[in-house]
Image (tube, rainbow, N blue to C red; front, side, top):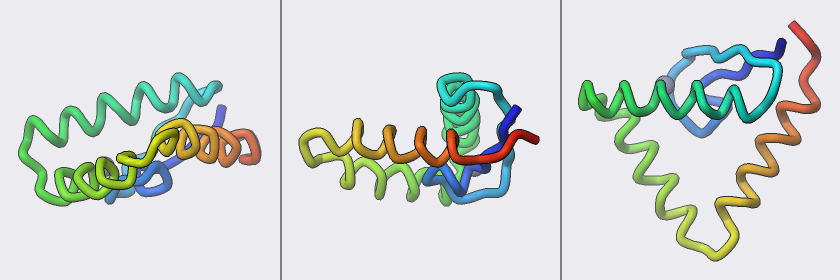
Length: 78
Ligand SMILES: [Zn+2]
């Protein structure tokens, strides 16, 4: 299993996600952000807004995803 934090995934807090695959980790991160949204957490709302403008560029989302996936792959197992 490998661990990445909300912060490492473009978020703002130290919530850690542990998974054996990046897809699983991304899923957990998504659920976390959705939960923070539901609680109207301003820091996460701001981070998502910043992320959204970053993703305006064609292909930026895929690039970002690939970069994070590479980061995950480079991590050592817990
Ligand atoms: Zn977070």
